[in-house]
Amino acid sequence: MRKTSSMLGMAAAGAVVLYGAYSYLQRRKEKQTNEIINDIMKEMEDANVFIRDPVGLREKLKAFLEGGAEKMQCIADFDGTLTRGSFKGEKAHSSFAVVARSALLPEDVEKKEKELQAKYYPIERSSDKTEEEKFKAMTEWWKGIFEILEEGGFQKQMIPEMVKNGTSVLREGGLYFLQRLDKEKIPLLVFSAGIGDIVQEVFVQQAADSTSKLLDNITIISNYIKWDNEGNMEGIKGDILHSSNKGEFPAPLNYKDAVKGRNNILLLGDNFGDAEMLNCVENAETSLNIGFLNDNVNELRKNFEQLYDIVVVDPESMTLVSVLLMKLLDKK
Ligand SMILES: [Mg+2]
Image (cartoon, rainbow, N blue to C red; front, side, top):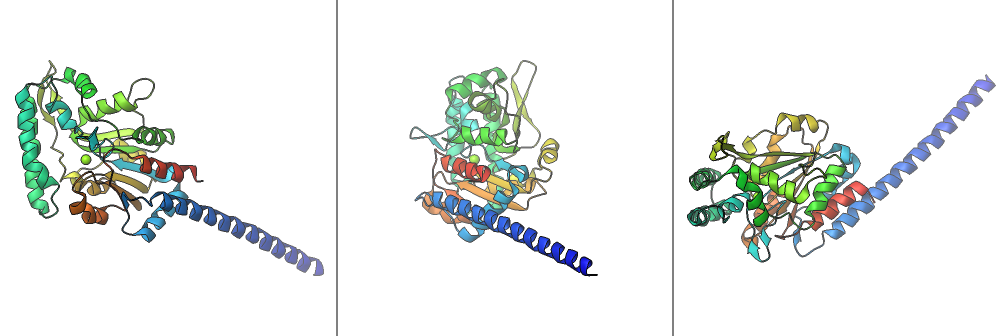
């Protein structure tokens, strides 16, 4: 009897020690997490960064730190988000402008494309148009531009040179961001309302792996050109994906498979409709939305702050986002 009770006593003492060690480790881990979050918030103390809800952001960062690379996926817009909004003081090329403003196509293609841009861009960036008005206008804009490119004689074999001579250029810090995601095997869905063929070529020229192929972790959803046997443009494949209907396109099946169990979503965009990219996956638990505000800052900042946890006013760099990713993954 005495022996039994002393054994029980020892077991209880052992449990207390174990619990003590466990709770010590938990407290230490929590302290480390808080230190990293403080560190990240400090990085964000920048005149060009706006955060509407710092407490909510801290909660999200905590979920990302606890989940690590295995729980993370990234969904990003392309034009003006992974690429620059401006380059050397000029508005940078979108994937459309890379084609339309290329010297390989007749001059009137550029003229017509600029006319469309002048008409529809203010609507796309307006904060007082209804969703229906934007949807209608964007559908017209996208149909118009594909017609112009097709009539202008766009050919598949022109793409490498067009991209080489264009100004669709990854943001400063963008290469690190892409390579780090790839290294950590974090799937990246590039969700672009631009031209998929151009998006892919920009990655191949500016962020390829050693075999000049698209990085393994990247999936692109976009408008792909339909080519005839001679490589002439013949419309596009599938429905038009424009800047106001991103919420209606599901992610490709291979991407959905790759992101099973990855419930922490890092979302990057530079437009109103980009926040809706979240609709394309079903398993979002925590989404950390980062929005780049490339122009109309005074008019759009408050609207962007409603859509994005972190708003970065910088048309050329994403270094801050790369630092954020690094701190989330290095955990120190
Ligand atoms: Mg964009």
